[in-house]
Image (cartoon, rainbow, N blue to C red; front, side, top):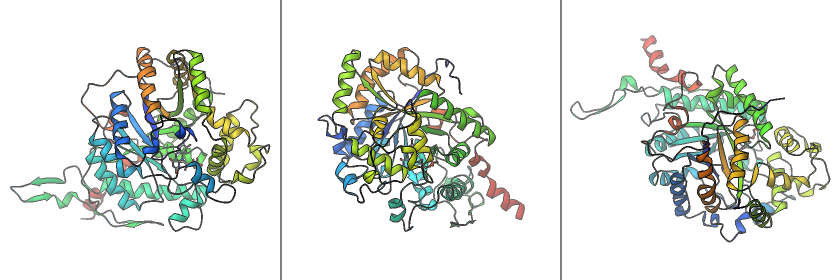
Length: 467
Ligand SMILES: Cc1cc2nc3c(=O)[nH]c(=O)nc-3n(C[C@H](O)[C@H](O)[C@H](O)COP(=O)(O)O)c2cc1C
Protein backbone atom coordinates (compact mmCIF):
# COMPACT_ATOMS: atom_id res chain seq x y z
CA UNK A 1 0.00 0.00 0.00
CA UNK A 2 1.47 3.35 -1.01
CA UNK A 3 1.13 6.02 1.65
CA UNK A 4 0.48 9.54 0.47
CA UNK A 5 2.42 12.26 2.22
CA UNK A 6 1.74 15.93 2.05
CA UNK A 7 3.74 17.46 -0.74
CA UNK A 8 5.69 20.66 -0.18
CA UNK A 9 4.00 23.54 -1.98
CA UNK A 10 5.50 23.45 -5.45
CA UNK A 11 3.61 24.65 -8.48
CA UNK A 12 2.19 22.06 -10.84
CA UNK A 13 2.44 22.04 -14.63
CA UNK A 14 -0.79 22.65 -16.54
CA UNK A 15 -1.61 21.07 -19.86
CA UNK A 16 -4.72 21.11 -22.06
CA UNK A 17 -5.60 17.55 -23.10
CA UNK A 18 -6.91 17.80 -26.66
CA UNK A 19 -7.53 15.91 -29.85
CA UNK A 20 -8.32 17.47 -33.21
CA UNK A 21 -11.72 15.80 -33.27
CA UNK A 22 -15.29 16.48 -32.17
CA UNK A 23 -15.63 13.84 -29.45
CA UNK A 24 -12.35 13.25 -27.66
CA UNK A 25 -13.13 11.86 -24.18
CA UNK A 26 -16.43 13.33 -22.93
CA UNK A 27 -18.61 11.76 -25.58
CA UNK A 28 -21.69 13.75 -26.47
CA UNK A 29 -20.56 17.05 -24.92
CA UNK A 30 -19.96 18.40 -28.41
CA UNK A 31 -23.74 18.93 -28.66
CA UNK A 32 -23.65 21.63 -25.97
CA UNK A 33 -24.52 25.02 -27.46
CA UNK A 34 -21.19 26.53 -26.38
CA UNK A 35 -19.07 23.66 -27.78
CA UNK A 36 -16.89 25.02 -30.58
CA UNK A 37 -15.02 21.79 -31.28
CA UNK A 38 -17.46 21.45 -34.16
CA UNK A 39 -15.13 24.05 -35.78
CA UNK A 40 -12.25 21.55 -35.61
CA UNK A 41 -11.41 22.05 -39.30
CA UNK A 42 -10.77 25.78 -38.77
CA UNK A 43 -7.20 26.66 -37.90
CA UNK A 44 -8.42 29.70 -35.94
CA UNK A 45 -10.06 27.49 -33.31
CA UNK A 46 -6.68 25.98 -32.38
CA UNK A 47 -4.59 29.10 -32.80
CA UNK A 48 -6.98 31.15 -30.63
CA UNK A 49 -7.02 28.35 -28.05
CA UNK A 50 -3.21 28.30 -27.96
CA UNK A 51 -3.19 32.06 -27.32
CA UNK A 52 -5.84 31.73 -24.60
CA UNK A 53 -3.96 28.93 -22.85
CA UNK A 54 -0.64 30.74 -22.93
CA UNK A 55 -2.14 34.00 -21.64
CA UNK A 56 -3.94 31.98 -18.93
CA UNK A 57 -0.74 30.45 -17.59
CA UNK A 58 -0.87 26.96 -19.14
CA UNK A 59 2.47 25.30 -19.83
CA UNK A 60 1.44 23.17 -22.78
CA UNK A 61 -1.08 21.63 -25.13
CA UNK A 62 -1.13 17.86 -25.46
CA UNK A 63 -2.74 16.35 -28.57
CA UNK A 64 -3.86 12.74 -28.51
CA UNK A 65 -4.18 11.18 -31.96
CA UNK A 66 -5.33 8.03 -33.73
CA UNK A 67 -4.47 6.59 -37.12
CA UNK A 68 -7.56 4.45 -37.44
CA UNK A 69 -10.84 3.73 -35.72
CA UNK A 70 -10.43 2.28 -32.28
CA UNK A 71 -12.67 -0.70 -33.04
CA UNK A 72 -16.00 -1.84 -34.45
CA UNK A 73 -19.17 -1.65 -32.38
CA UNK A 74 -22.01 -4.10 -33.02
CA UNK A 75 -20.03 -5.43 -35.95
CA UNK A 76 -19.53 -2.17 -37.85
CA UNK A 77 -18.36 1.44 -37.81
CA UNK A 78 -21.79 3.06 -37.58
CA UNK A 79 -21.73 3.96 -33.86
CA UNK A 80 -18.20 5.38 -34.12
CA UNK A 81 -19.12 7.51 -37.11
CA UNK A 82 -22.50 8.67 -35.80
CA UNK A 83 -21.12 9.64 -32.40
CA UNK A 84 -17.95 11.13 -33.92
CA UNK A 85 -15.69 8.88 -31.82
CA UNK A 86 -12.32 10.10 -33.07
CA UNK A 87 -13.73 10.49 -36.56
CA UNK A 88 -13.36 12.96 -38.18
CA UNK A 89 -9.89 13.37 -36.71
CA UNK A 90 -7.26 15.71 -38.17
CA UNK A 91 -3.50 15.32 -37.86
CA UNK A 92 -2.16 17.56 -35.05
CA UNK A 93 1.36 17.56 -36.47
CA UNK A 94 0.21 19.53 -39.48
CA UNK A 95 -1.17 22.44 -37.44
CA UNK A 96 1.20 22.83 -34.50
CA UNK A 97 3.49 25.29 -36.25
CA UNK A 98 0.55 27.69 -36.66
CA UNK A 99 -0.05 27.51 -32.91
CA UNK A 100 3.64 28.07 -32.29
CA UNK A 101 3.67 31.16 -34.50
CA UNK A 102 0.90 32.68 -32.34
CA UNK A 103 2.60 31.94 -29.00
CA UNK A 104 5.97 32.37 -27.30
CA UNK A 105 6.14 29.92 -24.41
CA UNK A 106 3.54 27.21 -24.81
CA UNK A 107 4.88 23.67 -25.17
CA UNK A 108 3.25 21.74 -28.03
CA UNK A 109 3.12 17.98 -27.59
CA UNK A 110 1.44 15.63 -30.05
CA UNK A 111 1.00 11.93 -30.46
CA UNK A 112 2.59 10.03 -33.31
CA UNK A 113 2.51 6.26 -33.55
CA UNK A 114 5.53 4.23 -34.63
CA UNK A 115 3.23 2.82 -37.34
CA UNK A 116 2.39 6.00 -39.12
CA UNK A 117 5.67 7.49 -40.30
CA UNK A 118 8.96 5.93 -41.24
CA UNK A 119 11.49 7.03 -38.59
CA UNK A 120 13.65 8.92 -41.11
CA UNK A 121 10.68 10.97 -42.26
CA UNK A 122 9.39 11.43 -38.70
CA UNK A 123 12.77 12.56 -37.35
CA UNK A 124 13.04 15.13 -40.14
CA UNK A 125 9.58 16.54 -39.53
CA UNK A 126 10.19 16.77 -35.77
CA UNK A 127 13.55 18.51 -36.19
CA UNK A 128 11.96 20.97 -38.62
CA UNK A 129 9.17 21.68 -36.14
CA UNK A 130 11.63 22.02 -33.26
CA UNK A 131 13.50 24.69 -35.25
CA UNK A 132 10.26 26.40 -36.27
CA UNK A 133 8.95 26.51 -32.68
CA UNK A 134 12.31 27.44 -31.12
CA UNK A 135 12.38 24.18 -29.17
CA UNK A 136 8.78 23.80 -28.08
CA UNK A 137 7.93 20.39 -29.56
CA UNK A 138 7.00 17.30 -27.54
CA UNK A 139 6.27 13.78 -28.83
CA UNK A 140 3.90 11.29 -27.23
CA UNK A 141 5.30 7.93 -28.30
CA UNK A 142 2.55 5.38 -28.94
CA UNK A 143 2.72 1.89 -30.34
CA UNK A 144 -0.82 1.71 -31.79
CA UNK A 145 -3.75 -0.13 -30.34
CA UNK A 146 -6.23 -0.93 -33.07
CA UNK A 147 -6.56 -3.46 -35.86
CA UNK A 148 -8.02 -0.77 -38.08
CA UNK A 149 -4.99 1.51 -37.65
CA UNK A 150 -2.73 -1.45 -38.38
CA UNK A 151 -4.69 -2.28 -41.54
CA UNK A 152 -4.38 1.33 -42.67
CA UNK A 153 -0.63 0.77 -42.78
CA UNK A 154 -0.55 -2.57 -44.55
CA UNK A 155 -0.58 -5.01 -41.65
CA UNK A 156 -3.20 -7.76 -41.31
CA UNK A 157 -3.98 -6.88 -37.70
CA UNK A 158 -2.50 -5.32 -34.60
CA UNK A 159 0.77 -7.05 -33.90
CA UNK A 160 1.33 -8.68 -30.51
CA UNK A 161 1.57 -6.30 -27.55
CA UNK A 162 5.16 -6.88 -26.46
CA UNK A 163 6.37 -7.10 -30.06
CA UNK A 164 5.05 -3.57 -30.60
CA UNK A 165 7.37 -2.37 -27.86
CA UNK A 166 10.32 -4.22 -29.49
CA UNK A 167 9.48 -2.38 -32.68
CA UNK A 168 9.29 0.89 -30.74
CA UNK A 169 12.77 0.24 -29.31
CA UNK A 170 14.23 0.07 -32.81
CA UNK A 171 12.25 3.15 -33.87
CA UNK A 172 13.76 5.06 -30.93
CA UNK A 173 17.24 3.85 -31.83
CA UNK A 174 16.89 5.17 -35.39
CA UNK A 175 15.50 8.56 -34.39
CA UNK A 176 18.09 9.02 -31.60
CA UNK A 177 20.85 8.31 -34.12
CA UNK A 178 19.40 10.90 -36.50
CA UNK A 179 18.75 13.57 -33.88
CA UNK A 180 21.85 13.06 -31.75
CA UNK A 181 24.60 11.26 -33.62
CA UNK A 182 24.37 12.54 -37.17
CA UNK A 183 25.37 16.16 -36.64
CA UNK A 184 27.90 17.39 -34.08
CA UNK A 185 27.13 20.78 -32.57
CA UNK A 186 29.97 22.50 -34.41
CA UNK A 187 28.96 21.13 -37.84
CA UNK A 188 26.83 24.00 -39.11
CA UNK A 189 29.13 26.90 -40.13
CA UNK A 190 27.27 29.02 -42.70
CA UNK A 191 30.62 30.69 -43.25
CA UNK A 192 30.12 33.04 -46.20
CA UNK A 193 33.76 34.10 -46.46
CA UNK A 194 35.02 30.50 -46.62
CA UNK A 195 32.03 29.38 -48.70
CA UNK A 196 31.30 26.49 -46.33
CA UNK A 197 27.79 25.60 -45.18
CA UNK A 198 28.72 22.74 -42.89
CA UNK A 199 31.88 20.93 -41.86
CA UNK A 200 31.70 17.46 -43.43
CA UNK A 201 33.95 16.05 -40.69
CA UNK A 202 31.11 16.70 -38.24
CA UNK A 203 28.18 15.35 -40.26
CA UNK A 204 27.82 11.58 -40.19
CA UNK A 205 25.80 8.91 -41.93
CA UNK A 206 24.07 6.70 -39.39
CA UNK A 207 24.17 3.39 -41.35
CA UNK A 208 21.43 1.84 -39.24
CA UNK A 209 20.58 -1.74 -40.13
CA UNK A 210 18.07 -3.53 -37.91
CA UNK A 211 15.22 -6.02 -38.09
CA UNK A 212 12.70 -3.45 -39.36
CA UNK A 213 14.62 -0.44 -40.57
CA UNK A 214 17.58 0.31 -42.73
CA UNK A 215 18.55 4.00 -42.73
CA UNK A 216 21.77 5.37 -44.14
CA UNK A 217 21.56 9.05 -43.21
CA UNK A 218 22.87 11.63 -42.61
CA UNK A 219 19.95 13.43 -40.99
CA UNK A 220 18.90 16.24 -43.31
CA UNK A 221 18.20 18.78 -40.58
CA UNK A 222 20.87 20.51 -38.52
CA UNK A 223 20.60 20.19 -34.72
CA UNK A 224 17.45 21.86 -33.41
CA UNK A 225 17.19 23.62 -30.03
CA UNK A 226 16.16 20.47 -28.17
CA UNK A 227 17.66 17.98 -30.67
CA UNK A 228 15.29 15.34 -29.23
CA UNK A 229 11.65 16.41 -28.79
CA UNK A 230 10.49 16.41 -25.17
CA UNK A 231 9.32 12.80 -24.76
CA UNK A 232 5.92 11.68 -23.44
CA UNK A 233 4.56 8.18 -22.98
CA UNK A 234 1.35 6.68 -21.62
CA UNK A 235 1.84 2.92 -21.58
CA UNK A 236 -0.01 1.30 -18.71
CA UNK A 237 1.15 -2.34 -18.97
CA UNK A 238 4.35 -3.61 -17.33
CA UNK A 239 6.10 -3.61 -20.72
CA UNK A 240 4.72 -0.14 -21.43
CA UNK A 241 5.97 1.12 -18.08
CA UNK A 242 9.45 -0.26 -18.73
CA UNK A 243 9.50 1.52 -22.07
CA UNK A 244 8.36 4.73 -20.38
CA UNK A 245 10.89 4.32 -17.58
CA UNK A 246 13.68 4.12 -20.13
CA UNK A 247 12.64 6.78 -22.65
CA UNK A 248 9.91 9.07 -21.29
CA UNK A 249 10.50 12.42 -19.67
CA UNK A 250 6.80 12.85 -18.92
CA UNK A 251 4.47 9.96 -18.16
CA UNK A 252 0.81 10.55 -18.66
CA UNK A 253 -1.59 8.86 -16.22
CA UNK A 254 -5.35 8.60 -16.15
CA UNK A 255 -5.40 7.12 -12.65
CA UNK A 256 -8.94 6.80 -11.24
CA UNK A 257 -7.93 7.91 -7.72
CA UNK A 258 -5.00 9.73 -6.07
CA UNK A 259 -4.00 6.48 -4.33
CA UNK A 260 -3.70 4.69 -7.69
CA UNK A 261 -1.75 7.66 -9.09
CA UNK A 262 0.64 7.51 -6.12
CA UNK A 263 1.19 3.79 -6.69
CA UNK A 264 1.63 4.11 -10.47
CA UNK A 265 3.92 7.14 -10.21
CA UNK A 266 6.09 5.35 -7.64
CA UNK A 267 6.17 2.25 -9.86
CA UNK A 268 7.32 4.06 -13.00
CA UNK A 269 9.90 6.03 -10.99
CA UNK A 270 11.25 2.79 -9.48
CA UNK A 271 11.55 1.34 -12.97
CA UNK A 272 13.35 4.51 -14.12
CA UNK A 273 15.83 4.14 -11.29
CA UNK A 274 16.48 0.56 -12.41
CA UNK A 275 17.41 2.01 -15.84
CA UNK A 276 20.01 4.28 -14.23
CA UNK A 277 17.85 7.38 -14.22
CA UNK A 278 16.87 9.60 -11.30
CA UNK A 279 13.25 8.97 -10.21
CA UNK A 280 12.61 12.72 -10.50
CA UNK A 281 13.71 12.61 -14.15
CA UNK A 282 10.15 11.43 -14.86
CA UNK A 283 7.45 14.04 -14.54
CA UNK A 284 3.93 12.71 -14.03
CA UNK A 285 0.91 14.38 -15.63
CA UNK A 286 -2.52 13.22 -14.44
CA UNK A 287 -5.65 13.69 -16.57
CA UNK A 288 -8.44 15.46 -14.63
CA UNK A 289 -11.77 17.08 -15.48
CA UNK A 290 -13.00 20.16 -13.60
CA UNK A 291 -16.62 21.26 -13.30
CA UNK A 292 -16.75 24.68 -11.64
CA UNK A 293 -19.52 26.68 -9.96
CA UNK A 294 -19.71 29.72 -7.69
CA UNK A 295 -21.27 27.48 -5.04
CA UNK A 296 -21.10 23.72 -4.65
CA UNK A 297 -24.76 23.46 -5.63
CA UNK A 298 -24.14 25.52 -8.78
CA UNK A 299 -21.25 23.21 -9.70
CA UNK A 300 -23.44 20.12 -9.19
CA UNK A 301 -26.14 21.72 -11.34
CA UNK A 302 -23.54 22.39 -14.03
CA UNK A 303 -22.37 18.75 -13.81
CA UNK A 304 -25.99 17.62 -14.28
CA UNK A 305 -26.34 19.91 -17.32
CA UNK A 306 -23.18 18.46 -18.86
CA UNK A 307 -24.12 14.87 -18.00
CA UNK A 308 -27.49 15.26 -19.72
CA UNK A 309 -25.66 15.59 -23.05
CA UNK A 310 -23.39 12.56 -22.60
CA UNK A 311 -23.89 9.43 -24.68
CA UNK A 312 -23.45 6.28 -22.57
CA UNK A 313 -23.36 3.93 -25.55
CA UNK A 314 -20.50 5.97 -27.01
CA UNK A 315 -18.45 5.50 -23.83
CA UNK A 316 -19.15 1.74 -23.93
CA UNK A 317 -18.19 1.54 -27.61
CA UNK A 318 -14.99 3.47 -27.03
CA UNK A 319 -13.96 1.68 -23.83
CA UNK A 320 -14.55 -1.69 -25.53
CA UNK A 321 -12.44 -0.48 -28.41
CA UNK A 322 -9.41 0.30 -26.27
CA UNK A 323 -9.80 -3.17 -24.75
CA UNK A 324 -9.92 -4.63 -28.26
CA UNK A 325 -13.46 -5.96 -27.67
CA UNK A 326 -16.70 -5.22 -29.53
CA UNK A 327 -19.10 -4.52 -26.66
CA UNK A 328 -21.98 -3.94 -29.07
CA UNK A 329 -23.14 -7.51 -28.46
CA UNK A 330 -22.24 -7.66 -24.76
CA UNK A 331 -24.68 -8.37 -21.97
CA UNK A 332 -24.80 -5.19 -19.89
CA UNK A 333 -24.62 -7.21 -16.66
CA UNK A 334 -21.56 -9.14 -17.74
CA UNK A 335 -18.62 -8.59 -15.36
CA UNK A 336 -15.78 -6.75 -17.06
CA UNK A 337 -13.33 -9.26 -15.65
CA UNK A 338 -14.78 -11.79 -18.16
CA UNK A 339 -13.44 -9.63 -20.97
CA UNK A 340 -9.81 -10.20 -20.11
CA UNK A 341 -7.74 -11.07 -23.12
CA UNK A 342 -4.20 -10.35 -24.28
CA UNK A 343 -3.43 -6.66 -24.10
CA UNK A 344 -6.56 -5.67 -22.18
CA UNK A 345 -5.20 -6.18 -18.67
CA UNK A 346 -4.38 -2.55 -18.01
CA UNK A 347 -7.82 -1.31 -19.12
CA UNK A 348 -9.68 -3.99 -17.12
CA UNK A 349 -7.53 -3.24 -14.06
CA UNK A 350 -8.21 0.47 -14.50
CA UNK A 351 -11.99 -0.09 -14.52
CA UNK A 352 -11.76 -2.36 -11.47
CA UNK A 353 -9.76 0.18 -9.50
CA UNK A 354 -12.24 2.90 -10.32
CA UNK A 355 -15.14 1.50 -8.29
CA UNK A 356 -15.24 0.54 -4.63
CA UNK A 357 -16.30 -3.12 -4.99
CA UNK A 358 -13.82 -3.70 -7.82
CA UNK A 359 -16.39 -5.70 -9.80
CA UNK A 360 -17.70 -3.47 -12.58
CA UNK A 361 -20.04 -4.74 -15.24
CA UNK A 362 -20.34 -3.50 -18.83
CA UNK A 363 -23.21 -1.28 -17.65
CA UNK A 364 -20.82 0.54 -15.25
CA UNK A 365 -18.36 1.56 -17.98
CA UNK A 366 -19.97 4.83 -18.97
CA UNK A 367 -20.44 5.95 -15.37
CA UNK A 368 -16.82 5.14 -14.53
CA UNK A 369 -15.46 6.97 -17.56
CA UNK A 370 -17.65 10.01 -16.94
CA UNK A 371 -16.70 10.37 -13.29
CA UNK A 372 -13.11 9.10 -12.92
CA UNK A 373 -10.81 12.03 -12.28
CA UNK A 374 -13.70 14.50 -12.29
CA UNK A 375 -13.74 17.22 -9.65
CA UNK A 376 -16.99 19.14 -9.20
CA UNK A 377 -17.04 22.19 -6.94
CA UNK A 378 -16.15 25.78 -6.26
CA UNK A 379 -12.66 26.99 -7.16
CA UNK A 380 -11.69 26.49 -3.49
CA UNK A 381 -13.05 22.93 -3.44
CA UNK A 382 -11.28 22.15 -6.70
CA UNK A 383 -8.02 23.53 -5.31
CA UNK A 384 -8.44 21.34 -2.19
CA UNK A 385 -8.85 18.28 -4.42
CA UNK A 386 -5.90 19.29 -6.61
CA UNK A 387 -3.78 19.47 -3.45
CA UNK A 388 -4.69 15.82 -2.73
CA UNK A 389 -3.55 14.81 -6.23
CA UNK A 390 -0.38 16.88 -5.80
CA UNK A 391 0.28 15.08 -2.52
CA UNK A 392 0.00 11.78 -4.43
CA UNK A 393 3.21 12.75 -6.25
CA UNK A 394 2.02 14.07 -9.59
CA UNK A 395 3.85 16.98 -11.21
CA UNK A 396 1.09 18.35 -13.36
CA UNK A 397 -2.45 18.09 -14.65
CA UNK A 398 -3.63 17.38 -18.17
CA UNK A 399 -7.05 19.03 -18.17
CA UNK A 400 -9.78 17.18 -20.04
CA UNK A 401 -12.48 19.30 -21.67
CA UNK A 402 -16.17 19.07 -22.32
CA UNK A 403 -16.09 22.06 -24.62
CA UNK A 404 -13.41 23.92 -26.54
CA UNK A 405 -12.57 26.63 -25.66
CA UNK A 406 -15.16 26.99 -22.84
CA UNK A 407 -13.79 24.38 -20.42
CA UNK A 408 -10.36 26.04 -20.53
CA UNK A 409 -11.66 29.61 -20.31
CA UNK A 410 -13.55 28.64 -17.19
CA UNK A 411 -10.50 27.03 -15.56
CA UNK A 412 -8.35 30.04 -16.44
CA UNK A 413 -10.85 32.56 -15.10
CA UNK A 414 -11.96 30.82 -11.92
CA UNK A 415 -9.65 27.98 -10.87
CA UNK A 416 -6.14 29.15 -11.85
CA UNK A 417 -6.25 32.29 -9.64
CA UNK A 418 -7.11 30.13 -6.60
CA UNK A 419 -4.37 27.61 -7.46
CA UNK A 420 -1.90 30.49 -7.81
CA UNK A 421 -2.92 31.88 -4.42
CA UNK A 422 -2.07 28.50 -2.90
CA UNK A 423 1.23 28.09 -4.74
CA UNK A 424 -0.15 25.17 -6.79
CA UNK A 425 0.19 27.08 -10.07
CA UNK A 426 3.00 29.33 -11.25
CA UNK A 427 2.57 33.08 -11.42
CA UNK A 428 1.99 34.31 -14.92
CA UNK A 429 5.20 34.12 -16.85
CA UNK A 430 7.21 37.21 -17.71
CA UNK A 431 10.57 35.48 -18.00
CA UNK A 432 12.14 35.07 -21.46
CA UNK A 433 10.77 31.98 -23.25
CA UNK A 434 12.71 28.72 -22.91
CA UNK A 435 12.47 25.34 -24.61
CA UNK A 436 9.76 22.85 -23.67
CA UNK A 437 12.28 20.58 -21.92
CA UNK A 438 13.91 23.49 -20.08
CA UNK A 439 10.51 24.61 -18.83
CA UNK A 440 10.03 21.20 -17.20
CA UNK A 441 13.58 20.12 -16.36
CA UNK A 442 15.90 23.12 -16.65
CA UNK A 443 17.90 21.79 -19.61
CA UNK A 444 17.35 22.04 -23.36
CA UNK A 445 18.53 18.57 -24.22
CA UNK A 446 18.16 15.09 -22.66
CA UNK A 447 20.40 14.75 -19.59
CA UNK A 448 23.31 12.32 -19.37
CA UNK A 449 21.11 9.65 -17.70
CA UNK A 450 18.73 9.51 -20.66
CA UNK A 451 19.43 6.85 -23.33
CA UNK A 452 19.49 9.47 -26.10
CA UNK A 453 22.53 11.09 -24.49
CA UNK A 454 24.89 8.23 -25.32
CA UNK A 455 24.33 8.82 -29.05
CA UNK A 456 25.84 12.31 -28.99
CA UNK A 457 29.15 12.35 -30.87
CA UNK A 458 29.11 8.54 -30.92
CA UNK A 459 29.39 8.27 -34.73
CA UNK A 460 32.15 10.85 -35.00
CA UNK A 461 34.09 9.00 -32.31
CA UNK A 462 33.61 5.63 -34.08
CA UNK A 463 34.80 7.09 -37.39
CA UNK A 464 37.78 8.64 -35.65
CA UNK A 465 38.76 5.23 -34.27
CA UNK A 466 38.53 3.61 -37.71
CA UNK A 467 40.99 6.11 -39.18
C1 LIG B 1 -3.66 8.16 -20.74
C2 LIG B 1 -3.42 7.46 -22.03
C3 LIG B 1 -3.43 8.19 -23.23
C4 LIG B 1 -3.17 7.57 -24.44
N1 LIG B 1 -3.24 8.28 -25.61
C5 LIG B 1 -3.09 7.63 -26.79
C6 LIG B 1 -3.22 8.29 -28.05
O1 LIG B 1 -3.46 9.49 -28.11
N2 LIG B 1 -3.07 7.58 -29.17
C7 LIG B 1 -2.79 6.23 -29.17
O2 LIG B 1 -2.67 5.63 -30.23
N3 LIG B 1 -2.65 5.57 -28.00
C8 LIG B 1 -2.81 6.24 -26.83
N4 LIG B 1 -2.68 5.56 -25.66
C9 LIG B 1 -2.31 4.14 -25.71
C10 LIG B 1 -0.93 3.88 -25.17
O3 LIG B 1 0.06 4.70 -25.67
C11 LIG B 1 -0.55 2.43 -25.36
O4 LIG B 1 -0.28 2.15 -26.71
C12 LIG B 1 -1.64 1.52 -24.92
O5 LIG B 1 -2.04 1.91 -23.61
C13 LIG B 1 -1.18 0.06 -24.94
O6 LIG B 1 -0.01 -0.08 -24.24
P1 LIG B 1 0.00 -0.60 -22.76
O7 LIG B 1 -0.61 -1.96 -22.84
O8 LIG B 1 1.43 -0.57 -22.35
O9 LIG B 1 -0.84 0.31 -21.96
C14 LIG B 1 -2.91 6.19 -24.45
C15 LIG B 1 -2.89 5.46 -23.24
C16 LIG B 1 -3.14 6.06 -22.04
C17 LIG B 1 -3.10 5.25 -20.77
